[in-house]
Image 1: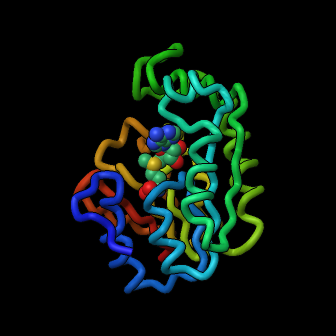
Image 2: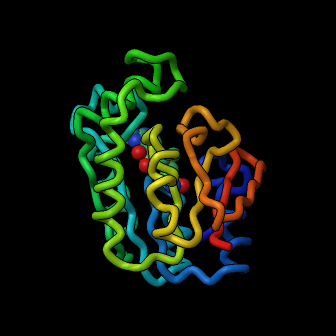
Length: 199
Ligand SMILES: C[S@@+](CC[C@H](N)C(=O)[O-])C[C@H]1O[C@@H](n2cnc3c(N)ncnc32)[C@H](O)[C@@H]1O
């Protein structure tokens, strides 16, 4: 499949093509599925997509996170592929953190959540979905807690990528603590994509 040049949502495809030429990625886990998922389906042997969602459609729209419809839409779109889709319904702790960092809660937009309570759930979710070995993990979820997901992936997956990294605040990338055994590759084109690669 051809991906349209300059498509802002899919501007991670070219950096991924380049990464995949350099590093062989047979199995991929992504957080946040969408049109770009097809690149992994076409280029990897095993793909798992994890989607954080809320059943409350109004809340989902307010927070710009997904409701169940999003997963259903892409399961249908990519029905010809064999892949794994794991939906995770966000608990109130995650919703509270999302409300905080999107400016509806107790902190101003793009700040840190007022409570760390959501981190336990992110930790448990990453533990739960990493049942097998993945060569690569890509974080492009609607959730604004992406930085926290990445922190949980260090030393569990050797190569980690994230989208929209030119702005470090919106998705909590400022909370990332890079371990000394990972090197960072920043690609600022488009919305920005960053790779953390185990040395
Ligand atoms: C921008 S999409 C990108 C997903 C994928 N990595 C790609 O490249 O296509 C990231 C997330 O935004 C959320 N999202 C984007 N548009 C949405 C919509 N119209 N309705 C519900 N959720 C949406 C979903 O949670 C989705 O996983």
